[in-house]
Length: 612
Image (tube, rainbow, N blue to C red; front, side, top):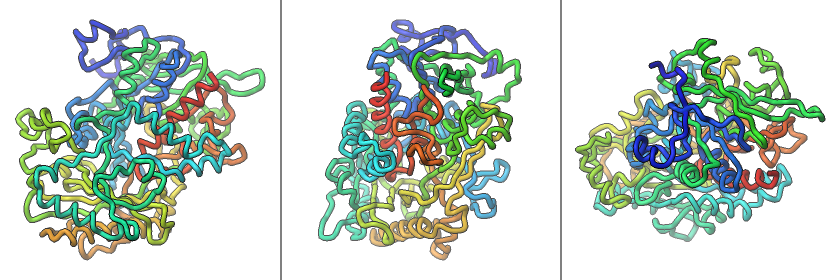
């Protein structure tokens, strides 16, 4: 039967769950069901690090909540659970959404990652319970105090005070385990030892006169508040070497709270409004399509006819509010499909504006990342025997099943995290991060997973990450009024490729640090990227990438045209509608994204409950 066909829907719970659907949980409405609620207190669109915690907190407070998740309940559970296999999750066709985005208006500025037939660069996203935390590399770094102070200054809202936000991060940690896993040194891999020691003793990663021990937690309050440089074992969201994230918090809450239901394979079409006596647009319902792989980002998507859409269409009403949490692409898209956004743009695609909010889909920000890839003269002994495929006869998989975080597969394969200030920036603002990872990884181009996990296991990659990007002119715009079609996305990186030397040179400085560490290691290798004779500035412009898209529905002051949300995440010109996800940030936070989003979600839930 084609995936777009409607089917009977029912709630799977209790004994029936254990008997027929062991991978699901109570509260999940499956694709075979017919009893989804027609009215609830809150609808949350999206189940990632924004929507998941918000939905759970509202349900724990006693309100009825329906989560609309466009993807299925899960993909390949082994790939999801085993940290080292996370790239396999990114390419899992069951949950994969492939966007293709422009970095620049001029296609010629893109390098080898550009896909001409798609007119863009691959930007992988995930559609399943947990959102992109179901496929990401699991690196977990909390926001810096400056990230919250900036929002407090912009909005005048004291609840963004860093001390208050730290309490929300502690709320995240009440359901989110974080561990630092480094089994490679424990099993005596001399090559990883050499890289480890070279990075640890590189003086540019250390504060003057101080030595940072490898066991130090970068997420401790002391290190977070100091916001200084350091060399760390990468923290990851796992427990005993198994991935745990917002997905587990949401599912655990649904298992014990019947007032929380998660509807999978439910693609939101638009928010439905009614005009209040005062003339405001109040969100009263959400229209969605019930079916699998309906969104064109899915590799298995099939175009729908009008009659099929009518058959799949459902509506759920809200007594209180709608919370959008679809991320930096889908939340602005859904706002615009609902008539909230730049009026002229909406009319250009045949949508009559309800509220002219110019900032929707603007201000798109992302990291600038570029890699340094080396090929060693011999494989890493710690992973040489690992198949890295999930095959049943994989000896490393067997070791993980019994050894957890003491086994190689208990690590996300990114053992080292370095942060340091940029030589042209503020000394207490670490704008450059380096992530050391096993494998041959250049950027997110088609086929990257097999290359990164390929054999022989004699490649190592440093990913130089420019935090606090200066590029803030990216856009998300509708191609059409069709909710199954992906939006047009242009990052306009580096002033659309013609400027922003500050960020470009910062990435190059990160690459120089990686090269210095490689050289200090004393290992025998050849550099595959950028390559010893490559012009670094050209390389950075052509091969840089990012996967932390954010800021497309920014929080701001009432008198700012850029602002889409107020400090309580309420959408301008509307009532009963909020956005809580990476798009809500005014400026991209820290060096890694998911933990700041989850922290913001905990705060947002508290603010929503104040108005409940």
